[in-house]
Image 1: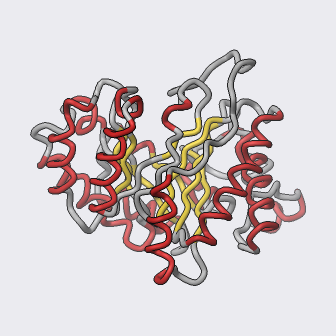
Image 2 (image 1 turned 90 degrees about the horizontal axis):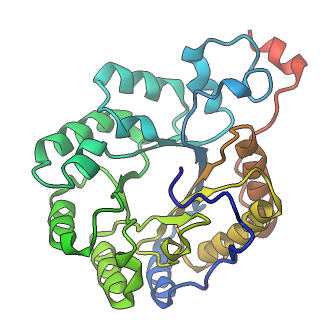
Length: 304
């Protein structure tokens, strides 16, 4: 995720903002129907990570087996491949068969819908996409609509119409990027209220160069977080601790599900960050989600 990435971090305040006042209200309303236990899904943007072969993946595996072994390390994936093309039914079936039922795919809507057409005249493409990913069955998590930085508040009626017409059998989160959505508090509150009424999460992005998108306004009992890391520097681990504490507080207040997706330039850093974050969240909440682990050579040999 290059959005908001900076090379010079000396003047970045990585402290998490306080919750938006309406977040507590959204979670309080969800608390009586909170599932037991609530769910945590952690993942990366891709599974074709050749650098993991011989450590997080067994040595000698075929590329076609990467997803199977990825799903032994993480329980979710930010499915970016769907941003570039709508998958056919055999491909979706292979994905579903490669992972356990507890795994969750979070497919990004095609750029032909979000960027090329900017949600205009996109009904047929949307239907095709939703029918395709419906084939993921119980492994389908929340899809997410990433709107480009050029999609500003002047397009709010188009966004509302699109979301009202979006198929209800596909859970959907929405990511806004245009600065104007966040510079006007009243506007952000209006958009958030619309998403809350529709039961759709507003994506949280923790990136160095755009601290405004870290709005801390939950619009449903589902948190959808995308975070940029910077090579496991001190601030990466401090943010992992802070996010563990914040999500722990949200879970106590009524959060049902948290999706956390890690973006590091060096893919070898993502499992290390994830392990630290998941261990800290376990210490705070007792939640048991298996963190990624390097595969010992002896174990690798027993997998064949």
